[in-house]
Length: 446
Image 1 (cartoon, rainbow, N blue to C red):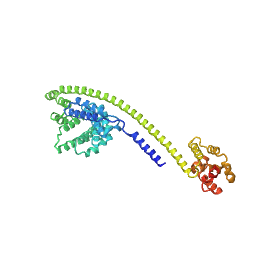
Image 2 (cartoon, rainbow, N blue to C red):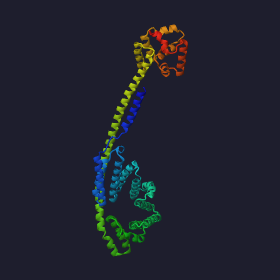
Image 3 (cartoon, rainbow, N blue to C red):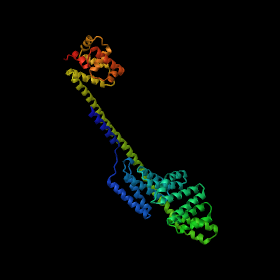
Image 4 (cartoon, rainbow, N blue to C red):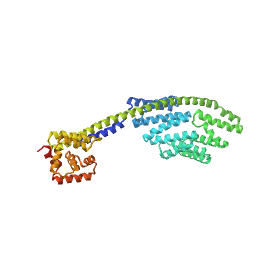
């Protein structure tokens, strides 16, 4: 009995394990291939070859991305980096909607592995992207989430500086120019104390001043664009603002000088739009394939889990049947100490089968098969002990088969306390120590 129970418990544990184990495993070759693609893509980014980098990051996700529950932390880490770098490409190409989508996927994986540094970095980029499309509530939500983390990051101040610039932009969007400029001045002071270049920050302040209508105050800051490190698109855009200021001042030579940047600016902008659209098309195609693949994997995994459950619970059902058989065998062994008659053992099996039939386990069936096996036994017992009533006779028959008090109560529709009192009364009336001893003379046994 105890052994059978232990086996069933073991099968239950195996059921939990079987239903929860990983269904899809990425091969070591695929992992190495994905790492190689990431390294190649990152090298392309360092060389400012954005369109050459992008397909490598798509390949990383394509080779590793299955259901998150089936991915290792190492795989999630690399996929989150790949999505982050895709978002970087979109950011450079000013494809904000695609950037936001890629950053969200990166953030989801980073949360799964609790990658605090990259969660802060990705959250800040998300906030920045939302601000660029003027969804400022979402921008503030992500900025507030990551700012405490960015304050404590000592190994890389760039994310902290980027977050402060974003805060200034949000102030500007809310038409709080003084607060915006104050934050920009704090950034410049922060970087100056660390010996860092502040030309780009000055240009940023100049843009805020220009768009607030303070063109004259903006001019010295915007002129820093000639010295700052920035791309052709960005420098061309700044020079177009200076061109407007010089036109207002009537400085034709300066206007002509600034206008000279227009050609390269327009060409670079045209290339940016074309490259950005190409990257978005690649990303959208991968998204469609990824979503279809993940849906197929979910359905496949659900089918596998259901199949495992059927197999495991089927095995448990078999073990339960074995446990019932062991219970019946234990009862038989218990009776063999007193009632050794083979006919009685066969009768006992029939009785146990009737009791096991939970839909039709009436005591009348048990009494009937007993009466058929020993036609005169009940009459003889009644003749010797005429003071036994019908209920006591039924309890005597059931108790002879070692039914427990609860089982007898269930069969007769009585309370357990009532059955216990009946049993006690029967033993007093018959002066018997056990029901086996009481019935033994009436079953033709000595």
